[in-house]
Image (cartoon, rainbow, N blue to C red; front, side):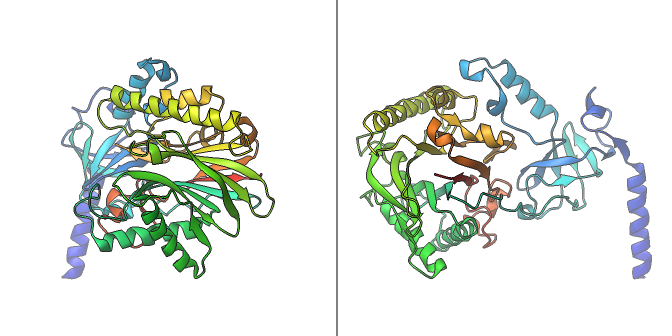
Length: 427
């Protein structure tokens, strides 16, 4: 009986497959979708997973990138190329509903010879669980062994206190899980300095993370740069470092002097000295205004952030605050390569090292479009000492619910919504 059922299932499957019309995407649909709606098709074009949502995947013959990352001229307000890229992204992508375990499908995985039914323009459905190629986690980028390794990471609302801005459904168990995931990721990276965005309650959250990292290392090897505050609900930036490899020096410098300002602890610079060589440099971490509200409103605020930042950096340079003109800028800038804030920093004389070393990469995926919200800039003297900049895709390639908020796993993946950027420096 079982053998008969299996044979019948195989016969029906073969019948369906043979009935599927072979097509290429998007070429076969250049004249529209009407001729294919309700039919089975087999797309012979390899398709990349560009987005992973609760019940579906966004697929395209190539990865989709945000227009602002590549739309040259947009910084001057010319949106012609922006809309051309936006339209192309929409036309060259489809949504597939299928049986999948979402958090096991990596963005960037590939589907070949997908057989599915067209239920509406740009919408496909299959009852099968597709088999993916290139679905294994990417290995950590190989970085030079000499010099220092810096990890710039947005750790997505790393809360010490679960009140205030914390998601109301976040529990203590989920908070511990996020800490465990971050610690596993940082152990794999083994950086000398971690420049972190989205830490809540300053020293309190930093101390909580350092305690966990030291417990994992089974020795007191990590410390944080104190900013002297543990109250309030504002998000801040901060530094965690290996005490046997580097040491901070000098007073922290802030782009905003008013401590009650929401951005005071989000644009900050610190001097670091390499223990082995005695060489020094300045590490500036920034978290600019997010893309909330209207585009013009948030862009205006980010431009104001950058203006304040450049004033601080000019003071650091002219007054030799740290006694060194080697300045490295990292963090979450909440804007892409061709947006005005990034362009203003570049025009001020700081080289965009993301563009220099990995222009086709990404650190963030939003609505299935990839790009760099996290950037690395350097003063001319510092740029020569940065040997490599690379992204470690620990987070953006994975289903959003793989993070600590839903607790689907205890791996190091999806501890936040941004990927960490690794910077190798030979002072």
